[in-house]
Each structure stands twice: as C-alpha cells, then as structure tokens.
Image (cartoon, one colour):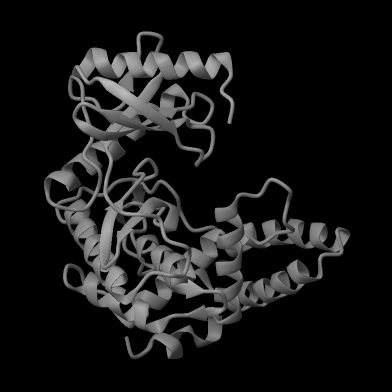
Length: 326
C-alpha cells in the first residue's frame, strides 16, 4: 500500500521519537496491514525486532488515553509475572508514548509465533492457551477492587428492538440466510431470561481474545496480543471467545480442543461445565446484533464472529449436553 505524505510524516515522527527516547537505531521496517485505522510497523533494530502501533486520533480521542494507560499497565504487570504477553517500553512511567507533534503510539518487543486460521488450534495449543488465560484472570482479579462495569448485558427489550431493525432490513434485501438466522434468534430471545447471567463474575478481562490477537508456536501459545480493550467487564468472555475462535472449525466444535483449554484454565481458576455454557451464551448475547445482512466493507473477523454466533444459536438447546463431560 502506498503511503500518503501525511502517513509518511507520522511514520517518520514516530521513528525519530523511538530513537530520541530510547536510543534505539532502526535499521529496517515493514508496515503491517492489519487492524482498523491504527498504523502498525515491525521494526528491525539494534536491540532486536520491535512492534510499534500508532493510536489513530479518530479511533482513540484524547479522552480515551487514560483508559489505554490502565490497560497497558495491566499488560506490563502480566509480563513481569510470566504471562506470555509482549514486553512494553515506557517513558516517565507511561506506556502511551508521544512525539513532539503529539502522535500517540506504543512500542513493544516482538513475540515468537504465528497467527493460526480460525478453528485450527491443536489440543496442545489450546491447553497452553487455557493455562495462560487462567493465569491472566487470576493475576488480574485476585486482589482487584470492584469497578463500574465498562459494558453491561443488554435487556431483552433492547436486544429485540435491534433484532427488529435487522429483520426488516434482511427482508427488504430478501436475504434468506440472514432471515433464517434471525428467526432462530427471535425464538431464543423469547425463551431466554437475562437472569441466566445473574451469576456472571465481574472483573478485568482482555475482552478481545480471538485468533488475530493470539500467536501460537507449534505446541503452545506464543503470546496474547492487543490489550487495548482490556477493561472491567465479565471475564467469562475470555473463555468462550477463544474457544469459538480457535476450536470451531466450520460447523463442527472440536470437543477435544475445548476440553484441553478447560483443563489448562482449571490449573489456575475454577471452571464448571455450567460456567462454560454460560460464557458461550454470554458471548452470543453480546454479539447477536452482528448477525445481519453482509455489507461490502464488513471485516473478515466480523464475518467470522457472525458465523460463530449463528452456530451457537443453532446449538443453543444442546450446549449443556455437548459440554457436560468436560
């Protein structure tokens, strides 16, 4: 992708600041074409491979910087305590770094591993991931002070209003597959009370654990990436989201992979079969609004999340039986 003159100025501003703040010499770089709005680069330097991400001012206005600092401070502590996350660079106690022209960016060491295709994690990789997520939850929440929830569960009424808008649009577009999926959603909404989520535990969670934010080695997790969305929510999202992303292959949930993830997680944190089912239903409830007629610029992850949501809906009444022995 050709860079505009503005993009080149931003890049040079950030690279110069990396050298000014840390004395790091950049020998080479490659732009990473992934993510939304934020520019990212892999750097080859005199101290090894580094990763830098600019925080776009539209996506991350100035008032969001404090929240980013909180999230990145958690990441830094997790790294210090042995969780496989990237090591961050800080200046004057801050991880959100700034250039003289006030471009905001983050700098960290590159981690070993590669991004896998959705649904294709091995049992060893899932066991290792479960261990890492369990340890992360334990460290984030073992001494935590209760906070206001960053996101709360939508009421049935609110979700139904959103459903109706998507239903009308799907019918107007004559999209039979979406209409069928939304009909299944309607039945679940009618038959389900949000009281099923009353026992959901509140705490700090990554809140974005899908394959794009995970690096794997051949038999283990290499790193958990992108802590920008870490917040005080329902940590159960961090159970179901990686399971759906890493173990749902097409229309088949790979139970062996689910089982090894759960085994790894239980080495650090308790996880009953009931909580496992509830976590999947919670993610479905949050992401149900993404089941809609596909649009031209829908991202690849959004399309995948949509398929996962449809799968959960189709198996809603059988999840307990499916996962009872885990």
